[in-house]
Image (tube, rainbow, N blue to C red):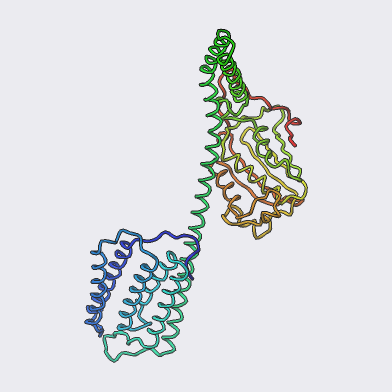
Length: 446
């Protein structure tokens, strides 16, 4: 039992104060119910313990620090006070056989979910000590008959063992749940960061197109004026400066021309791509590896391949999946893009050892990986188990349905399928057309 090494969200003292008020209210109701039932309990001592907790809580609330996050040692001490106060109350009213002992599980569970290992173990050790003390020296149960039976020591030890088992089990569940929540939160944060970066990079294409369009007119004016200056200026420094202006203006024009000639920088075309372009961009970063990486686009005979929306998250995810396949492949990786009337699917297949049975059942969860280390990886990527999680998350956010399995002849197979409505680009205005469709036979890239 204990906290996760990952950062936990710290509780405020106000939460601890509210929790203790609820505890005090519950204790008061139980003691009053015992009085109504005429049980032979030391009520004066019980009310003193309740008053001590209420006074301490009131002083803590009036201190004005309730809204700040509690430090770990502060939270541990607050929970320790709860354990000691409840243990003292239970000690007077039956010891470990008092059903109210189950309330000791609350502080332990909260510590397991919010504190680091050291502080959680300290509180856990204090609670274990209290339970043993309640088993060995607790007062008899407050029967209506003052001479009622007192449970045997063996029975009380058995009750203590059962309570300690419950404390360990519930505390362990709380620790595990908090650890998984923290890991998932970190992984999702990394996913959001990756998506934001990819979107910023994608926006650069549109920015370049806008710059080329907006700068074209003033640059033409500068070029015309500079040429007139060359013709009108006498020989000397002024003429040389004017000629320099002309040459630099021509250079700027060439740069803008290259920008506008690239399809990914044209506003109308940048937002869409052919399936062939999509497959090419997914495998392009991995073409210089020893592994043969090939992509192919196929579909029903006579059906025109759809144009899809350019989505940075999809490109990033597919590139990451191809990278994963390259690291495990023996000799080749095949990326198959298929389309039909209903949807578009992408399959990444390698000829490596495939997914192990342990990994296959947990694929898509964060921090699950069998990727080789950075030195042994063909891509140079150090496996941390987040890449696959990020890729799966990004693809599913676009409406993709993911599948993972091993091929019949070996190797891992990762597939994603979209409905055409989720991925297909809207029709282009008249006069625009994307090239590069080709026939089925021409759609293979190496």
